[in-house]
Image 1 (spheres, rainbow, N blue to C red):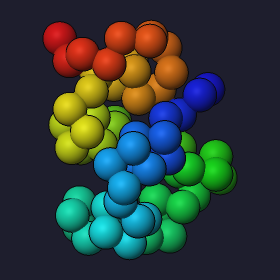
Image 2 (image 1 turned 30 degrees about the vertical axis):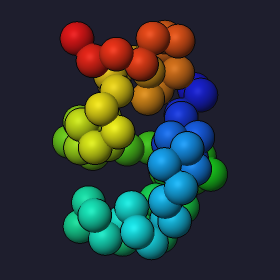
Image 3 (image 1 turned 60 degrees about the horizontal axis):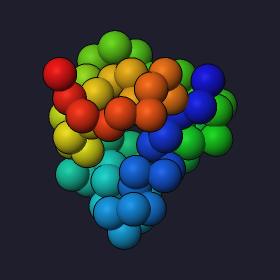
Length: 69
């Protein structure tokens, strides 16, 4: 799976810490998602997709179209 979290985070010039604070998450969790050490659950996928204003399919690398439906 081509999880695009790091790409989206860097595009917005956010640190892992800032993203974690914005989403009320732990920075360690962000790091593990980005490194493929942990998979995000459905609730987290929705939270991340909404935050970056992209579809879950785009976030997961299933489409090249970032637009939310």
